[in-house]
Amino acid sequence: MTNSQKLWGGRFTGNPDETFAEFNRSFGFDIRLFEADVRASIAHAHGLHGAGVLDADETAAVTGALRTMLELAAGDADYMNLDSEDVHSFIESRLVELVGDLGKKLHTGRSRNDQVATAFRLWLRDQIAHLQTDIKDLQAALIAVAERHQTAVMPGYTHLQRAQPVMWAHWCLAYLEMFARDSERLEDVAKRVNVMPLGSAALAGTSFSIDREAVAKELGFERVSANSLDAVSDRDFAIEFAGACSLIMVHLSRLAEDLILYASTEFGFVALSDAVSTGSSLMPQKKNPDALELVRGKAGRVFGHHAALLATMKGLPLAYNKDMQEDKETVFDALDTTRTCLKVTAIVLGNLSVNEARTREAATKGYLNATELADYLVKKGIPFRTAHESAGKIVLLGIETNRELVEIPLDEMRSVAAQINEDVYAALGLERTVASKSAIGGTAPSRVEKAIAAAKASLNG
Ligand code: ARG
Image 1 (cartoon, rainbow, N blue to C red):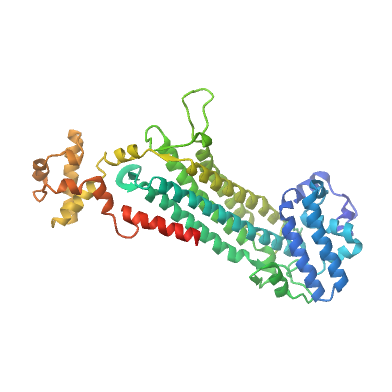
Image 2 (spheres, rainbow, N blue to C red):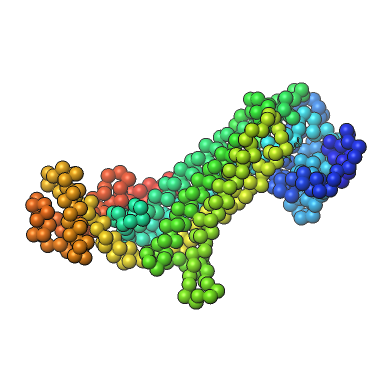
């Protein structure tokens, strides 16, 4: 395409350098904004009608052609094959094909600067809803696997050292909480996405009397932007979105890491299905957790997009600068990657089984009930610090003689703390240990059962 054929060709006499033209082109990726940009263009045509720029027939012809364009694009893969600079020029070229010179009136009172910000926001608003659906599906998978193994007990860890026993379902619900916050965060981002820049034109606003609020209403925007300079140069919403995706990926990567560990021979807590594992080309015995490793790895990629957006926007002068065209691929890939990872993780969980005997065995080895012993002594009237010291001594006794706490005879325990009685063994039992954590948020089975019910209700509500 020569420069004189471009949207902005008037003041040009020379032709573009081919390498630069390709460098400048965004149509290869902003094609994803096609439908959103057509919808915004239809609303803008109505705005122009209200401003007296298009009469009723012209408005009907332009909006009709824009709708036809959506159908043509849906019906013919080749329809999008034009050598356009970006999706906005593509739409204008196709419009002029359909309605002739009338199509050239549509750009009155708008610039690609407010147009791209509007289309991007419209598109993102829908995508946020899809992402939230994926989060819900993953939460449902977490609840399902919690219920499949509702009585399973396993070691809980701090510093990756056995700490205290917890219910498997409690582990599942911990992740459910993280994803609930992620969804809430997206809801909050959506509020700031849902603001319409259209009508800000290039940077200064428009001189046509377009009823911006009516246009916004047609497009389902909650508000119109209040300052034209800010409206065309603000990409906070994209950065926030990538940030929200990054946190989802933080949570997914932690879940992935836990399961990778739990699936190892050393732990042997869970079995991953063949459907989400791979083998080794050399070692016949291997079953590798590739699905989870990829989820863990792709977190880095999404953080990279977030950082890239921040770096692109840093120090840009007001208002629009072409640097900002870099916003799209980062957001597109952050979205696609996060969605795929949510889906794959839900599949992994859907096929996961817990080796309940093994997790129970692990939860009874390694003095996970030492805190119980200290609490027992506290209940006998000993200050916690002293109780902690005594329990530590008894643990040391156990370590030195390779016995668990419940295997140490009463007289040996009493030599450390005389207040200990026969009832200590019941207090140190696994079921009692878990059941005693019954305050709100604790791992007691009764609490976990209620938490599952509440999670189900809020997911279906
Ligand atoms: N493709 C451009 C982008 O994504 C559209 C806006 C172009 N505006 C301009 N003044 N050249 O940012």
